[in-house]
Length: 228
Image 1 (spheres, rainbow, N blue to C red):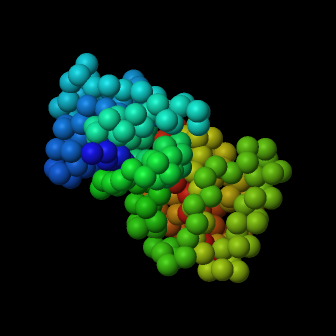
Image 2: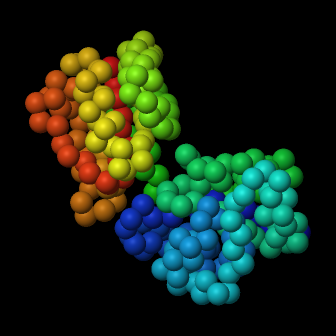
């Protein structure tokens, strides 16, 4: 009998007990095989949920040629856990490719409940929740980034669609500055920082209001949401 691939969310910063349901923790503790984005952080997570990392068989996600080997436990009848670096596997995450490979091979995939910065930010933003799109990272170059922001703002206005994007933490202040310089005054922007942590901040204002009092994000994980 084939094993099951479990897509396991990991905390965004809070403890596993504060972020994950007890049923998820029990499932993780019963697993011994894991495909992970980063072995070091995976071992830290397993230790935090009460597993012995030394008893776990951990393999890092590589390129597409590694997928068959990573899925070997399923063919041998053992369940396999897929661990993201933070948040939910498959959302802005390289684990999506392994999930696709599991489907092609006919294995069952079970998503477990846990935190997603993208979803939490949208929930708390007050922006359009019926129509939204996650855009990942915007271009780094100033001109290309400004062009992309204008394109997303125009789409948001046309489709009444919330645009969601992220940035490497040390570039979040630069992205915020670009948004304030580029967007129309009435466009609403949500800045969701340090989600699930005691320092969490989720604020939504029109661009005109942000310009009067722009926050200093610093090197903190942040999700940006825009609705024109």
